[in-house]
Image 1 (cartoon, rainbow, N blue to C red):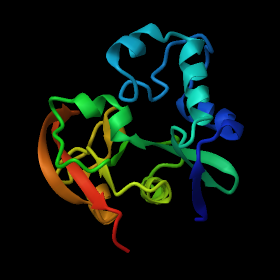
Image 2 (cartoon, rainbow, N blue to C red):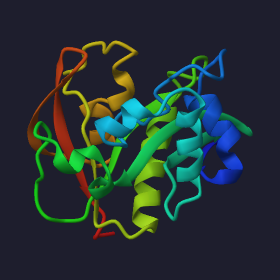
Image 3 (cartoon, helix red, strand yellow):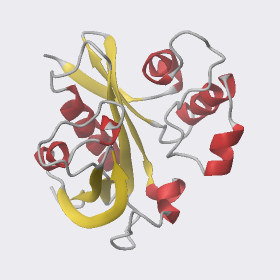
Image 4 (cartoon, rainbow, N blue to C red):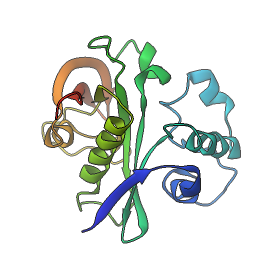
Length: 195
């Protein structure tokens, strides 16, 4: 498998729309991976096509909204990535701050149906790590479920699992008060200042 990841930029917005946009009705209000990127008021105010337009504007920013995975030229996955200071996580009461480092967060990992079970989520997380490192982040965090190997409902699996993050070199930095799919979430951290 020759999966590679690249930043989600304006010229790749059509592929990002395949990963995040509505499947049938372009006016449908789907997540577009904004639920954890913007504050609750902004999230509620963005409806229908406005959600995609907002994400498209993010593609034109200095660091974009995340990374896309491709397999043989076909988009197969997505990972959301941004400085934590720009996210609602910066003010979260459920997910703690470990320290004052200006960390980046990866909070959503999606693999297209028909491509799952092939290691794409590992490539996405690795791509997010490399993009954060390239952008000068001192560390990167994720907030996956601590499922102890139990099956996670696909709807809630977007947060990742502790095992996925551990295989990418992350270590548990803290417990959280957050739960996803019935499992507690943990704060996983990877220091990017070394090696």
